[in-house]
Length: 447
Image 1 (cartoon, one colour):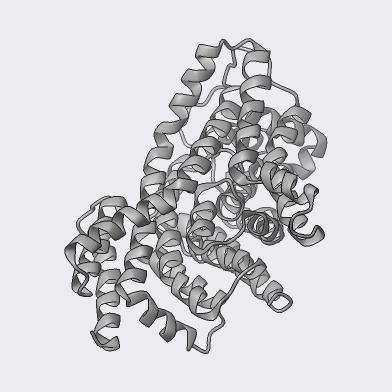
Image 2 (spheres, rainbow, N blue to C red; image 1 turned 60 degrees about the vertical axis):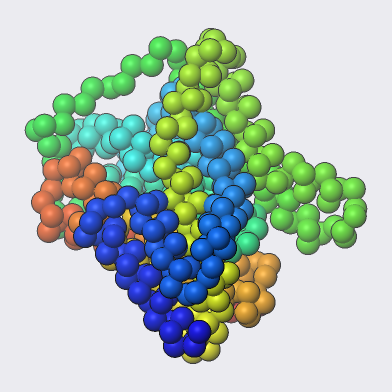
């Protein structure tokens, strides 16, 4: 089949995916599966090979992602139920003081969203924003935007959140580099899109606590855990994964220290250790029975299931592109583009994000499309971490009415659609653009 025909098939597949998600309202998982099957058939693959490719793509992706997302979900749920999220926010607000509460909320969001899903962290912490706004008379946005920025940054850039984990697996990037570059991109993104933009927009839009939001302080059955314990547990998997990556630079292959750090710093092992620590120190050591801990862990897997399936479908889409030959043609075309791969990855993710709204679908789609470029150009090592960050940045910008996060903010802050575009959409776009800028700058020094 000619290269032109394969390109047309790829383009038709991408538009077909967007049509199924936007117009027919089919779930992203089902849409990705349908498009993957149709692309394989249209490209001339034998029907039995299409099925084998689907199984291979799903199994190859979920062998890693399902374990990591599942462990991360249990880790985050235990932190949520124990009151660890509240403890982080309360301690930071106390240390920073009311005058610098914007910074405290931004940092709290930054730490909380590492193990806890974005919307869960926001719903738990938004009563603190309400309380500060009522006390000071300032706009909700003065406190809410920094919190949202902190949550959104780590949700987009720093594993073990599902998006960057999925992209890293699909393009073969080491999570250690993703974490390192995610922190480097995330800190300036949080500062600019959080406290700085929050202060600016709060002077222009005065939002008050909506009448329909009657929040009361959440009561916990047990005393809140200590700040030091919570911070340490959150940092454990990040530090272990980073040590693993750094050991490959410091120690020669075969060195005993490298073998040890490679094992304990593997994301699966690191998250298993962190999850066991939460079960012990936030669970049984604080009075929860083993059955209660088990119930909490089981409950945590409910929202993780659909994320795992969508990510697996992204793996299927990638594998179909590769096995059908469409990926080679696309890869050669994009590799010949004058745009640097980091910017190209950002633009692909941004286009899908604007069209259909889901950051996760945008990430896995962009990763599937950019992976042939990576194979053709032979990119490896740290630069793949930058590609992950650029894809995450593209999947963050320009959130609007087709994104569930848009309506979450709209409802909890009681603002209209126009003001939500001026606040949430601009904040998300700032996060994405700053992240892209950091990735491009780092790319100048990393080959």
